[in-house]
Length: 350
Image (tube, helix red, strand yellow):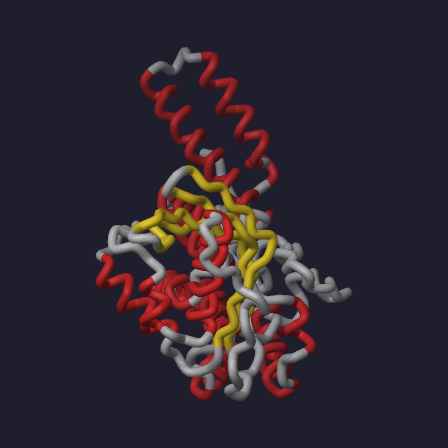
């Protein structure tokens, strides 16, 4: 049977600008670096003790929680690791690495459909995440191998299935791979960061597996949110200008944490991303926006197409809070109702 070895993510980089490496407090970076060294040396019990101490003072810290998930994976505690990575995907849906590491664990457990779904989420979050693409290819190969095995069980003389199975086995290198299918810390190889628009790429932007983890930035002191755009467009009878004005107001309300105005930008029949009820989605958005700290939302490269009372807006969105900085592509579908342009659907990473 074809064996696969998925590559786990070791650090959070894709949704965190490499520039943050220069902003992280020295004490915090040193603590995470020490934990990373212990993981590399296989000192998992000591690493777990240290990361628990670290998280006692910073329970919401994404990098610390991510490292704990890696440690638990290495200690053969997959259920606890899955719980940590799953919660990270809920708290930080913009990060692809937790999805990737969930896929690693699911593949270990031969839950290939779950692994496939997790990797598709990682790619949807960051389409340029090369590790997830490679892992997804391995999952497809594994599923194909199972299908060809089944075909040969039904008809052992099926020469076409025999050739295809042999080709996949050769591709996956089963003859040269002893041992178990998936090792979380896996092959030492850099995780490719997503390039953030208008952010100069430092020399240390690509961090190899053995390097220190990238720390999340410290909480910034409260300060008034900067305007999203200096001169937002006003309703003028020009459909594209009116759509631009609606998007300006939506982003500005988000930035100043005006939940009522922010939610009013969405139509009553808005299609929630997870299929949950509108009331549940509203409550979750309010909970996230009301978290302590400032929020800054801006965008660039806005492209609008209008078809009657329907419009599509595509742009690059930049989000920054006290604990997270991300940049991603976004698509908004809008409709004109009672003279207002309202959002009926939004997609990230397309």
